[in-house]
Length: 260
Image (cartoon, rainbow, N blue to C red; front, side, top):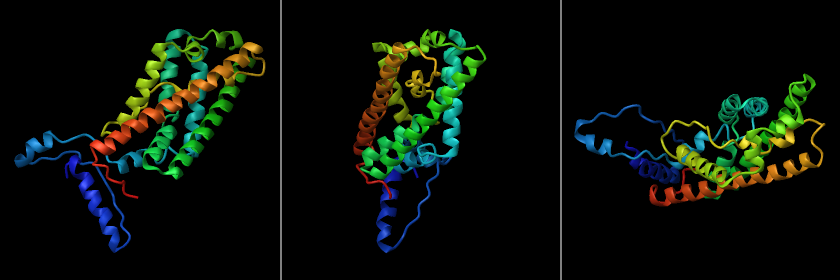
C-alpha cells in the first residue's frame, strides 16, 4: 500500500478486533513499481504512522543495559572533549550526542502525552532519569581519573567553550536547541533515517560531573544554572514535539487512534 493509505488499513485492522485478538506487523517496502500508478507512487507522502514511531522508540526509549552503557560511553567522550582544544572538543561533543541516547526517552514522553498514555510517559521519565544518573556518575569518574593523571583541572573545565554555551546560553544557543528538538521529532515521525546529532542534552548538566575538588561557590553556581538548562531543553522536546505530533495526527492521519 502507499504510505497515505496505511491509516485506513490499520483502522480496518482495529475494527477486526471485534472478532477477537489481532496482531499486526508493518514493514516498509524498498521499492514499489507499477506503471499504471506511477504518479500516485511519486506523489506518496513520507509520513510514518504512530505505530511506527512507537516502534522506533521501543528500545532506546526505555531503560536497559545497552542504554546505560551508551549513556556512560557518551559521558566519557563528552567529558574528555570538554577538556580538549576547540576542534577536538567539537568533534567529541558531536560524537557524544550521537552515541548517548539522551533524546529518545523525552521523545517517548512526547508520544505518551499526545496519545494520553501515562504508561509511556512514566517509562520515558524513568529512562531519562536513569540515563542521566549514569551520565553523571560516569562523567564524575572520568573527570576524577583525568584529574588523578594530572590531565584535568577545575579551571580547565570551567574555561571550556562548550561549557560556557550551557551555563550562559545566548539567543543563538536557544534557537539551536529549539530547532534541534523540532527537527528530531519531525525525523522520527517521517520515513527518514534516524540519526541523532541533536542539541547535546547529555552536556547540559555536565558541570555536576566534576571531581570533589571543584571551584567552591562558582562550582555550585554553575551546577545550579546547568540543571535548569537540562529541564528547559527537555521541555522544548516535549512541548514542540507534542505540537508537531498533534498536528500530524489531526491533519495527516485524520485523527485516527493508534492501534493499541
